[in-house]
Amino acid sequence: MLVVGFPAGAFRANCYLVAAGAGRECVVVDPGEGAEDGIEKALRDHDLTPVAVLATHGHYDHVASAAAVSEAHGVAVHIRSEDRHLLTDPAAGLGPELSAAVGSVSLPEPRGVEPLGEGPLDLAGLRIEVLHTPGHTPGSVVFSLRAEEGGRLALTGDTLFAGSVGRTDLPGGDPAALATSLRGTVLSLADDTVVLPGHGDSTTIGRERAGNPFLT
View 1 (cartoon, rainbow, N blue to C red):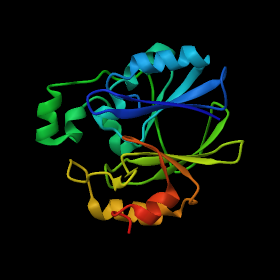
View 2: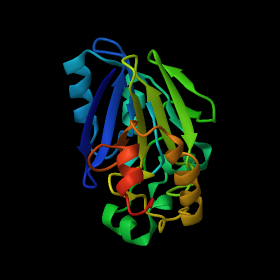
View 3: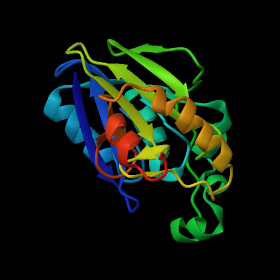
């Protein structure tokens, strides 16, 4: 499996391209603010062809470039229906403080939008499990994949970070729902699962289970 990740934009949100290997189709996960150039470079460097955009949730720093990628490559954006409105109305998910920092921003409608359900996605030669993890936003999800080499990945968006968890003080945030998602869904993953979060460095489920103060 090939995973290319890089932080983008003022909020340094991680964007990931995931493929079965170089020269293959790929999915683009969380193309946020300022991610377009990094995505195009990764596509060229690894000879990848995007077939879908996947959003772990609808916040601006994770979907600001979703419509541009959708239009440029003729692919749909996959997002939970609860966060669908944030694709074009980012202020609805930011609250007054962050809205002031971002400014008055509206985003174009993507070429196509597909609602994420509970079942797996078969895209780019990958089987991607979609785990609904409300709390940070009502439509937050974790994407879980098993590599042919035997390892497992979890792209956790802003649900789980190395040493921390997602904030719940923005519109739609729910601390009780986040606690349930972490305990019932995220911590059910195997300890050797590599966590690729929406911000910051990678980690593992086992490391977070043992040392993350928000989980212990």
